[in-house]
Length: 341
Image (cartoon, helix red, strand yellow):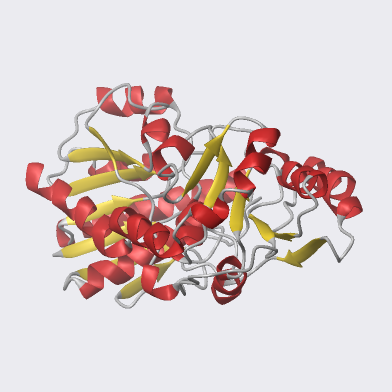
């Protein structure tokens, strides 16, 4: 089967460091190839897949509206010319990319990794369309856009073979926060917990470019880093994430928003590291209570769960997560959608 994967420019596929959706696209492209399919990747500069890679656009998350319009026209032109060459167009970019082939026989999967705009779904569904399916990375994510069309939940994924299982860690091992250092991710809450519970804490992640988030980092994170109890590791690549997660006794996920998924949770589980998370967004779906971690509602409840970490089996934690989220499973779930077209 010939598959076209589409991703917005802005961050390369695969990303060197930050880039959740881009990492999913890269993993799927590689797994589709492993399954014997021919893959073409349409993505921003410095992107790569084992099959053919078509580069377009500009790698700048803050690029102008005019730049995004040029990117849209490029994708439209490509799809109009190549629409008969693919059995499946799997789009992780903008929904409007699919407009030229909306009513074409080619199978189309529009996959969402973040909150969905219902208005766009209603508009596109009013147009003549064939073989168009929608997926979301969680039921929580799907609920934001499931107003029309054919929807499925397919969870996010990691390659579990790329992560090392640590079967045992010391009781005084650090806790870890890993993620974009924006206020909604809750790194400041992780620091509060560490100080209240006298726990060592590693913080890792990228500092957003937006002025408001930069101010938040300086005021709520940078001023609390002492290099002893609270250490900032910077933005980590994949091997560094594996190293630090495997040496942590738990990942803290104290989000302040309705997180559509939270890939870092299954990255931690792949190392056998359980997750303690605020019960918002997709957390309820991702964590298996008392197996891969704990779901809580308050900081004090999060602190209480730290004493229970030694009761969790890290081997079983990884095993349960792999059964649900490994790339070999998730890629098959996407392609199985073809059976019902």
